[in-house]
Amino acid sequence: MTFTSLPLIAGSVSTVIFVVSYLPMLVKAVQTKDLTSYSPVNLMLTNLGNAVHSVYVFSLPVGPIWALHSFYAVAGTLMLIWYWRYTRGAKSGRTRPARAERLPLSTVRGLSRRAGTARSSAFVPMTPASALVLDRSVPMAARQK
Image (cartoon, rainbow, N blue to C red; front, side, top):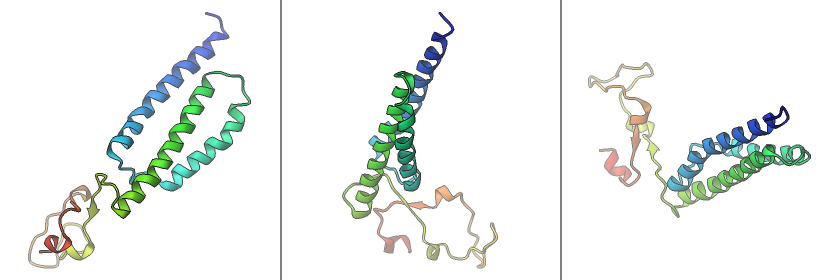
């Protein structure tokens, strides 16, 4: 192994590591179609950054950086397309991703602004925010009873 091949080997190994680290995110996005936790601004800026960075990357000699940047550009584009497709479809009812909605403030009665206290005589235990999630299949009228 020569000194000049060491950077090529390191670039190839790091490219494989980065690609493998991205794959679970892409697979989960395809399987669940739930991209509501992603920021659309971040996805758009990622694609803009990839487009600008492409000018630099593709001016370099062909190497592992081309493969890595191409993968990032394709993955970023797919995530943005899937975000638009799946979140817009969820809002219009065309698809059914695993989504939930938060409890409206009107249903959480008796809680004061200070955690752990209640205005009424009934004790309302404090729960983590993740527990304050309801299934959309239950009608709103049934939830408020």
